Image (cartoon, rainbow, N blue to C red; front, side, top):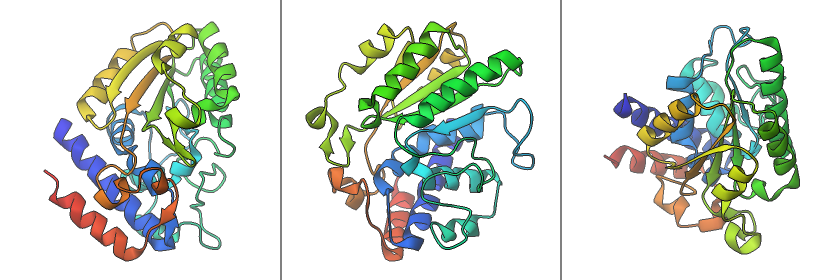
Length: 271
């Protein structure tokens, strides 16, 4: 299973590269850092049906760091929600794949992404509604480390902790980079683990590129009586050296079709 998840993560990176390469610019760095998390969710843990996207009682994923939409689209296409060829329509006229996820356009998207911080509040609300309904769904959310500077994140965290929303499992994509520079220099969020514990969350720290660690963390989270935050230490642009080398500059950068092919060649050389 671990090798299968590693392969899926590579496929997500490849398809993300093709997706962003089709439009020539995009948030490639923060998309590539999520591949192992998305592989685990869509190909092992989430109870979803690509042929019935509105299935009652399905697990939900809210990607609050909405600029990672292309990586989510790649995972959805690989899961069978829509043809892979549709990835090449990113941000084009009449596309179903806008740069930030839109639940009214794309099959498999459970919450529209917008201003940073808002998606996480929605995830908390969805988790509460699921508990009230008793549908046994697990609600997953992904927030960014730069996004974690938003006050709205902590208002939602306080409520989820106070309500002991055990059906809520969240991830922080902690690559220490945001659009303006390094997170620890712009507005330091450390010590992040202590902050989440203070809000009455169970906290697990993992290597965000180790599929096995992520798998084990999700399994542990499902046994808790409170919400869980999985803090994933990641590398922005992971797997593509010329993207990684840009540092904070890869948050949103030109990325051509030629760049996509170079990225895929590099990803396929990796053992």
